[in-house]
Figure 1: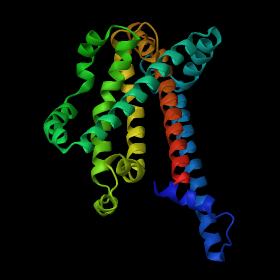
Figure 2: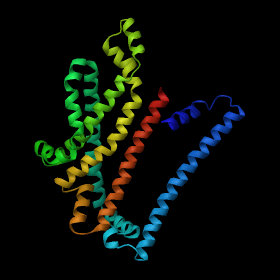
Figure 3: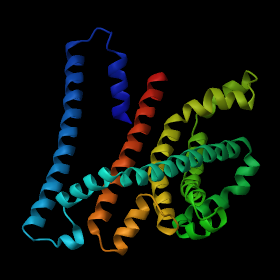
Figure 4: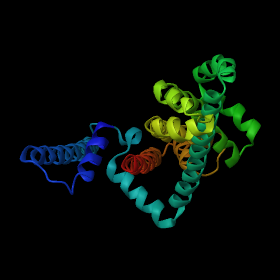
Length: 279
């Protein structure tokens, strides 16, 4: 978050006159970002290189772990026959819908809790219990209720993320400066105006954090749902690969899953950047 703020400040100040010290600071910040990126990429390359080397030298059993070259060949094969994209599209669709529903409904309930102190106090113990429950363990029941298909998988993804969103966003609402709210109340502002002018704008970092957490949770919900009922999707590929002992298929699916989750996270990070810029 601090890096984002600094980056925004840098861009905002591009048209201003810089002092020498300020320019040095900006250059150091840019260099630091570049070093971090290079280190991250280097770690990834080293990891895959060591994995491949260990497989070729037969230090590890490729039947159990596969290896990067096999994964790459399988990826090209699946991409060539088009089946891979079908699974990616299905899982991505389920995740995005589950993610949007979980975030939207969670934020809506958080607003309701902020709006009514009575409802907040009534629902507080239920929220704590629901948050403590392992939602993935409830997935079979959720799918039975919602239907054994895409609807059930989306509902599972939404259920996994909604409670975390409610608690996170509501917590952010409660931390908003009381003095600002009292000042608006003094001027006769309604509750809707306080929500629009103070609560929501002040809680944007909290909502963004909830979005970032929900990226991972939505993927967990979708993969668990696909493990149980799906005939297509990344989760289905992982289960199928495990059942027929095709570990290269399992590992390829896991790597694709990691890439998709990372891309979705980058989309949220881009949204965060835009929102900070507009503040």
